[in-house]
Length: 301
Image (tube, rainbow, N blue to C red):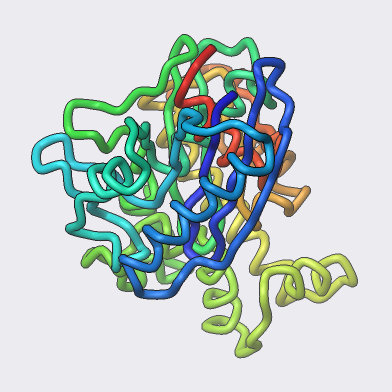
């Protein structure tokens, strides 16, 4: 058995996975906001609770987290949960839990889960995307995570949106928390979709409300989704040109927009440097649980 922890910005989820890949126990707790020490304690308490529930102690623990661990300093960086940045997160968890802990970026955990027994099972090359409050990406090749020389492989959300459209005022683009302008995250995250709609149409609507309005024939909402379809297609075309994955898996709240799986592939061939594109776009089979399952998979069978 092993424990997977998904350390999110608003919630921390933990599961116990057995040798048959079944989930034996699951717990969720709120993430302490802006408090590093309280976050460490919440994860440690969650591990203890899960172990007590299944009647086993000192289980192997894998943790998915925002941002990435620097292979040079060992400190966390690039997290939009900024209280974690600059902290020795892995060392602190290992000290608290008294055992080795394996850790990976949350999008990497999504990619690993979906490549092993999810929507991309059997594919040799997989790119997974989180379209949520932020935008992240993870790469799996031949069943193994690709972390890269600098530990940032798949950090797709902080490249600029490619082939910007002048008619949509996409350059230089919105300011990003990372210090750049026009990052993919500033266009494709859930809050970015809502901000784009308000900026162009003067309506403050959330993602679900925009989708509902478009379904009812609202022209402004439909135009917002058409811009989003186009931006997602361009951004994924960039990935296909670089990594050429067999399958691209989408997770996160925005991934529940059904039209994306038809519209983006219909559009991306305009930017992919190939006469034919056979890359498959699919929703995460395990949905919101894929990241926590992937964290457990950091300890393979």
